Image (cartoon, rainbow, N blue to C red; front, side, top):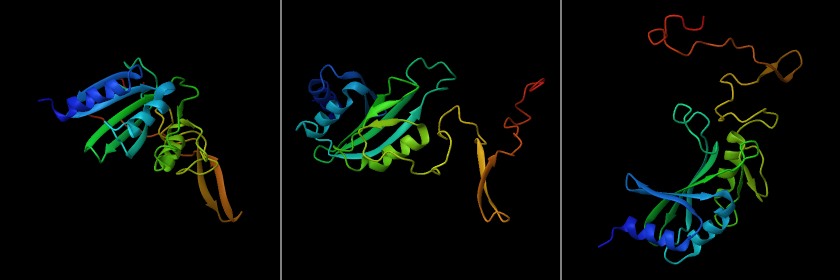
Length: 197
C-alpha cells in the first residue's frame, strides 16, 4: 500500500506534468520546485485539482542563496518558498520558485488564488527586493518609505547605509550617514594569527 506522500507525489507529477523542475522528499515532507514562468498555472492546479486541493497558503518567504553552501551554490540567487495546506486531504507541501533574473527578481503574484499572500508578498519585496508580478499594492511593509536597499539580502551591510535620529534643534527626524564603527564579529579564540592585517 502506497504511503500518503507517495500518493501525493504521484498526483503532483501527473497533474503538473511538464511543469515540475524537481520533486523531492526529505524529513517526511515533499518539496516541489517549479519555474517562475510556470508557477501561476501550477499554483492554480495545486489549488483546484480534486486530487490535490491545496486550499490554504500557510506561509510565503523570500530566500537569498548568494552565500549558500559556503559560496558553492550554482543556481539562481533568489527564490520564494510557499507552504501549502490541503485541509481536504490533510497534506502539506513546500513549493520553491526561483526568480530567473538576479538583477530583477520577478515571480508571479498568487494573490488572486490565495488572498492571504498579500502581506507575505509585500514583506518578501521589502526585505529581499523580490518583485511579484501583478500584485496590486507592492510597497514597503516593514521598513521606512525612504529606506535604501533590502535588509535581508546577503550583500546588505550589517550597519546599513543611513541612520535615523530625532534632531531636537530641527525638531524633526533626520537621516545621516552611518556613524557606527565596524565591530569585529569573529571571536578572538577563532581568529587566525594574522587576522585583518
